[in-house]
Image (cartoon, rainbow, N blue to C red; front, side, top):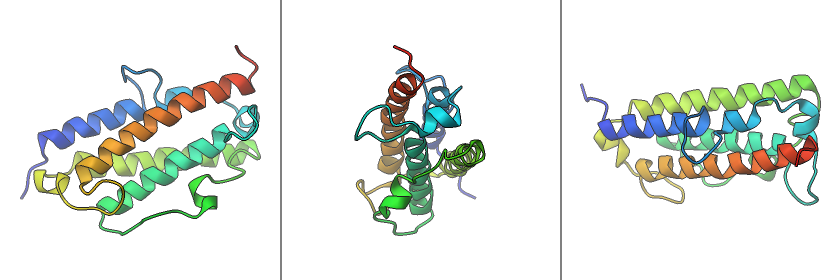
Length: 161
């Protein structure tokens, strides 16, 4: 039986920090979403920008793509309605479903990363980086980038300065 690689454990820890909290850069995805209700998530306070709900759906979609790629699926791009799902906060119930999907995709990806072997980290994948290690590093960057956007949009939607 192959053992989990220490580098995979470190990447899983960083994934946890980028998603749940404890990252040095600032709020994680879930910290950024804490206290954001459906109305604020659906608001478009900046013309031409995504909503918080669209960003939450987008982060979930790409963590799902990463998990699928680690599993060997050749996912290249997503159609626009999957990339930035619309109406993810049309009602409080749809907002709860969006947040539940986000959490579910995170948990699945985290478990896959945590259990990677050294060989698994260096395995080829489709996408912008040729290895699983690069893919996971990209997810970390993606989470940090969008967490920052969510903070700004949520403050603007809630009227905070």
